[in-house]
Amino acid sequence: MENPIYLSVVLSTYNDGKYIGQAVRSILDQTYAYFEFIIVNDGSTDDTLAVIRSFDDARIIVIDKPNTGLVDSLNLGISTARYEWIARMDGDDIAEPNRFEEEVRLIRDGAVIISSQCSLIDASGKETGYTKFLSRGIGKAVSISIGLPLIVHPAAIFRKSVFQMVGGYDKNMLVAEDYDLWCKMLSVGDVVISSKRLLKLRKHGGNVSIKKSALQCLNDTIGYVKKVYSINRVLRYDEYESLRSMISSSEFYLKIYCIPNKSTFHYLIKQCLRFFYVMFSGHVRKVVRQIPR
Image (cartoon, rainbow, N blue to C red):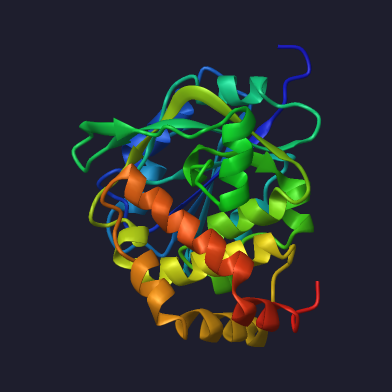
């Protein structure tokens, strides 16, 4: 290929020994070969590191460090990346062989994030469903406006320069650090979503988003507040605390918004509730006015 776009693939892993071999192999077997593969072992206590080191491929760069959490590990991995386009991957998912080939093809002027539809699999690898993101035209615009999901974290590639411009992953936004990042980056440019399913996204009891769903609800709402009011930066701790206190005081909102999704319709109702709460709550506007842009 003449003048290929090189990718820096960044995978942070903690005790993914059961799945990490499949995840790494799916990246090494990509039909698009122009990448470096940065794997950050975040202090795993199982055989994760041994499995990683069993692969003999010059593209792999292993960073073995004490456990400091996902956000710190991802920021570290991306800081060492040599290339402008960062490709994310998780230690329990499986990339389709043509993932990078298809995503690189979608890179264009103005795009800061490229992602795709995904298949959903369970702990054993059995397919249980697939995503149906509204990724075109009015559907895409509405999704961005009311905060419907468009971007699966380990299916995305994004511009490192824009990532750095908006402050990277925010350690104050645990479990919603990816949503917060997308909101900040989309204030700078556009997202392009492939209609193809380019990742097998594993859903199992060990997913952090399942274990910490209450914290995710809270931080997800903070990310949406920042998006709506164009606060496209990493906030100070006291600024986050004022937002958390404000949202936590709205017991009715949290009680409804944190109910587990029972259907697509139920999920849409919850997102609409969030939209109206953030857009029209005088309490929200009062707190936001105290936060400099």
